[in-house]
Image 1: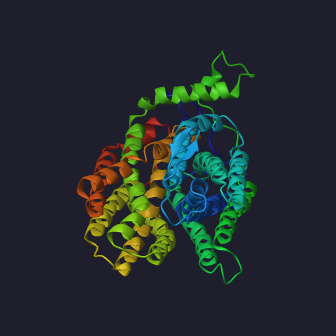
Image 2: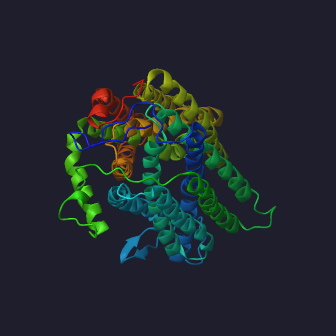
Image 3: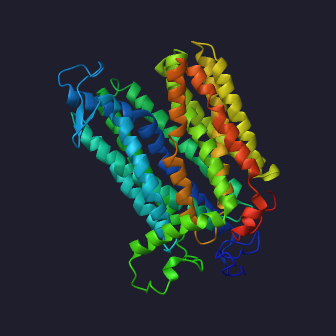
Amino acid sequence: MTPVPTPGPTGALEPTDPGEPTDPGETPAEHRREQHSWYWYDWANSAYITTTLTVLLSPYLTTLAKRAACPGQDTGQTCRTALRVLGIPIAPGSLALYTITAATFLSAVLLPVVGAAVDRTGNKRTLLARIAWTGALAASAMVFLGGTRWWLGVILTLIANLAMGCSLVIYDAILVDISTPDERDSVSSRGWAFGYVGGGILLALNLAVVSAHDAIGLSSEAAVRVSLLSAGLWWGGFTIIPFRGLKDRPPLTPANDPANSPSNGPAADPAHNAFSQLWHTLRDLPSYPQTLLFLLAYLFYNDGIQTVIYASSVFGQEELHLGTGALITTILVVQFVGFFGALVFGRLAARIGARRTVLLSLVLWCLVVGTGYFLPEHRAGLFILLGAFIGLVLGGSQALSRSLFSQLLPRGREAEYFSLYQATERGTSWFGTLMFGLVYQLTGSYRSAIIALVVFFLVGGTLLGCVRLRKGIQDAGNPLPEIL
C-alpha cells in the first residue's frame, strides 16, 4: 500500500517511497494505460502549434491585414497604410507578430494564477479537456477568416493561444500524478516524441493540400482555411483520449496553503485564494533555491533554443538564399527526427541522468549554431541536414527539462510551479530574438547573429551545472530517483 504523504518541515509533502505506484490499488496495466492516454494530448495540441502557429497563420493574417489597409492593391506588394487597433497605428506586416507577442505576455500574467487555482481542485483532467476544447473551438473557427476580417484572426489567436498555455500547465502537472520519479524522464520524452509525430503528420497533409489546391478544386485561401480548421479539429478530437483515459485525483494541499488560513472559510472566493496562493508562491520561491536556480538556467538556454527555431527560416531565406521548398522540407524533417531524438535522449537519461543529458544537449546546441555560421549559400541539402540535427537535440532537451523540473516541485503544488515554468518560457522568450536582431543590425550579418546565441547555451549550461540536484529534490520533499 502506498504511504499517504504528510506535510514536511518546509510545508511541502513528505515523499512516498521511490518506485511505489502513484495510486493505491492501481495495477501496472492501468498505470501504463493512463500514461498512454496522457501522451495523446501532446499528439493533439502539436497539430495547432505546427500547422497554425508555425506555418500558416502569420502569412495569412498578414494577407488579410494588407487587404484591409490597402484595398485593391496586390497583397504581395508592400502596404504603407497602417491599420488602427484601439487607436494605435499598426503596420499590416507587423500585425501577426504583435498578436503573438500580446498572447505571450497575457499568458505570462495569467498562467501563474491558473496554476495556483488548479492545484486546489480535484479535476485536473476535466479542466484540461474543457480548456483544450475552448482553444480547439477558437482554432477551428479560423475557417471563417477571409476578406478583410483580420480582427477576427486576432481575437481567435488570442483565445487559442491562451487556452493552449493554460492547458499545458495542467498537462505538465499531471505528469507528476501518473509517473514515479524514476519513470518521469521516459514518460516525458515519449510524450514529446508523440507530439512530434502528430504535428508532423498533419502538417505534411496540410502542406500537400495547400500546394495542390488547384488539383482538388480549392482556391489558395480556401486551402489555408481548411488546413486551419483541420488543426482545430485535430486538437479537440484527440483531446477526447486523455479526457477518457486519465483520472481526476483529490488535491494534495500543502500545510502552508493560504486557502487553509482561518480567514478563508469553506465559502472563500476561489479567485481570491488563487491570487493569495500566487503571491505566496512568489514569496516562497526563494525557500527552494535549487528550484529557482533551475528556472534561471532554463530561462537562458530555452531562450537560445526558441530563438534558433524562430530565426532558422529567416536565416535560411536571407543569408543562405534558399527557397520555400527547402524551408518547408526542413520543418518536416525537424518534426519527424524530433520523434527519434526525444526517445534516444530519454534512454540516455536512464543511463546517465537527466541533468547530464540536458547538459550534453546544450553542448550539441552550441555545435548547431557553430555549424550554421559556416554553412555555404544555396546548399539546401546541408541546411536540411542541419535541421535533422536540430530535431535530434530539440525533443530531448525540452522533454528532459520538463521531467527534471518536476523533481524539484513541492508536492501538491505541481501546477502552481509548472505555471511559473511556462510563464518563464513565455515571458522571457524575447531576449534571444532581441539579441539576434541587435547583432544583425550592428553587423549586417545573420551569421554573426546566429553565432551570438552561443552565449545563451553557455550561461544556461553553467547555471544548470550549479544546481545541487540532490538537495533541491530533498528540500522539495520528493523521493530521490535512482539515477540523478
